[in-house]
Length: 220
Image (cartoon, rainbow, N blue to C red; front, top):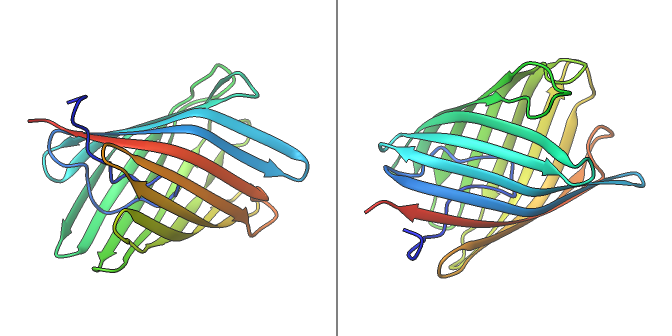
């Protein structure tokens, strides 16, 4: 399995995910080597970041997420959940639900986030849309609200450039709106994924950049 990896179809550096799964017995691993957010004159770095999916049958996968904050010297984010999705004839629907885990002692109880997923595929383009709700009591101020995003990709042989719009609106804070561009480069055994997002509202970081590597292994 380690000697013969395939490129993974997971979606960092984007926040939007597709209405498809890894496939029966497949493991998708995405490793973020750096994510840098800058707001006014302050910067926030996270590394490493990890996303791992394990396919169970043709329509289900288990999802895990973990992020480490370099400047705070501790884990900052963690989640565990599942996705159900069905993609046929270029049209897909799905549901993804994550339990938001308290990964250090300063955080409170666990939260939850759930999204409805849509995908439309064409020979020259793909569009993915997500919309859902979240409840997160881990910090001092409990966050609850909705989030939505749309991602358009334009596959060209080994390159998949994309454009994304992301919105997260919590009742206790102003809406966070970001627009971004990204590119996925498929090499023989792995993918390189990079993205650049800019803030379109005061609540969003001014700029955010990230770099990821992605692998996929299929069980024989």
